[in-house]
Length: 261
Image (cartoon, rainbow, N blue to C red):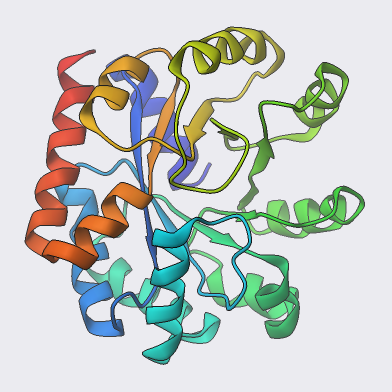
């Protein structure tokens, strides 16, 4: 078991949904990113999702695209993202960390090199655009090093495909709340129907992300799903108001989930 597996067991014992917080590594710069991410676990984040900066983040909306641009402009790379996590681990050895990335930076860096460099530091990877036929090799290599390759599904993923994904998926399933980009609008009625549909198919926890923006969204999903992913709302708060306000928002989201158990 790695940190992610232990966290999931803890959440089951506490009978509550977990909070997953996304930030782009190196946004707005390396030092501030280290300072913020090192405090997320203490502020109430159950899992930290670290976005690897990329010049063409096609699944992301304007807010997170801008974060990628800021990070790249400040010199952030995949190599420096690994260094950032090493610093985070000095302050927070226990909170699970997942890399969220596109395939291009991984291939440019070298997948074997990436696994070797992150072993013991992170607990899984979510590769947004990895082709289905390519995933099996990645899964095996990550599993050998006690890491998960996180699977994703969308509202229009057919039942047959969901069943195929469920056979191999480990860690947790990341379900995209709405078709479209991160930070989009959310139809809660349709989302609730989809949650009811996919839950019986998967034996692993279900995470919901893309479009969750505010406390009402978190309250609505509390205890309906295992993990709630907040990204654009936090990235936007960081950009507009800074680290202290961002940590306060994390604390508020976390308090909602702990009050609903």
